[in-house]
Amino acid sequence: MADHSSNGGAAGPTHKVLVPRHKLATRITHWINVVAFVMLLLSGLAIFNAHPALYWGQKTDFDHPWLAMTATPAPGGKLVGHTKVGGADFVTTGVLGASPGVDGKPQARGFPKWLTMPPYKALVDGRHWHFFFAWLLVLNGLAYLAFGFWNGHLPKDLWPTRQDLKEIPHEIVTHAKLQFPKDERATRYNVLQKMAYGGVILAFIVLILAGLTLSPRLDAGFHLPDLFFGRQSARSIHFILAWAIVAFLALHLFMVVASGTWNNIRSMITGRYAIEVPETSEGGDHEA
Amino acid sequence: MKPERRGFLSGLVLSTSALVLAGCNKIANSSAVDHVLTSAEAFNRRMGHFFVRPKSLAREYSRADISRFFKPNGSIAPDNPADASSTPAYRAHVASNFADWRLVIDGLVEHPQTLSIADLKAMPAKAQITRHDCVEGWSSIAEWRGVQLARLLQKAQLKPNAKYIVFHCADAIDKNDDGSPLFYYESIDLEDAFHPQTILAYAMNGQPLPVPHGAPLRLRVERQLGYKQAKYVMRVEAVDSYKRYGQGKGGYWEDNGYEWYAGI
Image (cartoon, rainbow over all chains, first blue to last red; front, side):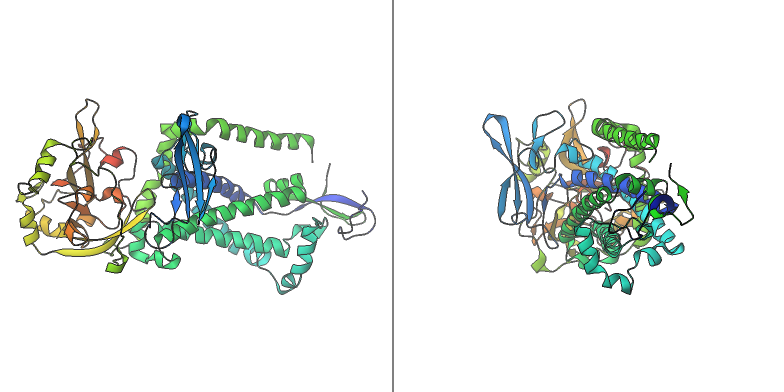
């Protein structure tokens, strides 16, 4: 098959071969992380709904949240949802502040039922889901880091090299044009991937620490709120980082689609990734 | 990619989304699922106790940190006859400014006690400015003054088989199935009962404890969430097991599914 891409590297005829891309430990921990993060996000929003407002500092200044979702009654038994960010007030009926409950009737609730686990309003059950999947996320994350250092994945594949840093401007241009290498370079992370994945690992670590700060028992041992400028700040940072990871996820899914949906998904399930090599070269399985 | 493999993957994605969309409520309502989920509670408790020593102190703050508005929660108006939590007995105590009110300490103790507010105030006082973290997510800071629970328990002298301290409260937080009042109650273990910051507080921010915050006496057990801080405490009972009270989970909110050890 001919390669017409200017970014493909090799000139002349090429064919596709399947090559190993992701190690088994990476694949397993990736998918467990997907499940754990989604459940933590949904149950976290259910917990947030018990007091849908966020503050800065150690204690709650109820009159000055930086983010608040409220409901005000309107004629005809309706509820108007408001979202206040800083000084701005947005009407967000149906999604934030007020939306239909599981019985279909309008309900005062921060996030809507399709973004919370459980969908019905129950702080107690939200906490149960959250703590269960928090342990799954932490144990899975520790396994990922342990394998990553043991098999060299983290230092070899994720840590940017000096050469990587020089390529940042070039990579930004090719990413903006949605041009991705299809040859053996595609089996390695480019510098933007390294920075994004490294950033997500860091975000998860800070996110978990901010969550642990909400524990009065742990605060007695470690004075964790000092790390985050107070317990209410820690709650805000926990919330912001969760959404930062959602933003990463959106970009991540976009890049998966833009650079070859099924090839990427297969490589994260079976570990094998199709690349294009010149006709003359050997090695790898021919794709059917 | 082979068509059948693509079919498998699409099927996986589709069936998962269908399950998620249709099943969340059903899954969330299942008691078997809840049983699995709540297995995490023991991990939370064990890790908290593993990493934080029994006598480690909750952070104390300065007067400047005290909240201008400390949100009262749970029962907040048992002095109001129109309030569901109110009882004639409690209203009579409010009317007489708690002159006839007595704290009873009994159960598995050698010397049961009956103490008035004046008796408690005559004992050495412990004051602390601490942060109250509600399970809902907010925090308020106040100064509490009272008697260390350890001091009261030493006076009463626990029997060797005492394992927990149960706090019986005056507010009718709910109703039993037969319509009779269900009084708030809580329980803690001896590690927390003998912790230096665990006090029965009779004053808040230099004033006698206000009714919304648990007059005349409330528990402060500073390394746990707000629902453990029992208000309107009438009786302190030493027990070997808290199973015989309420639904047997050790407290009103615990009977409603919340964690007995409220460390996070």
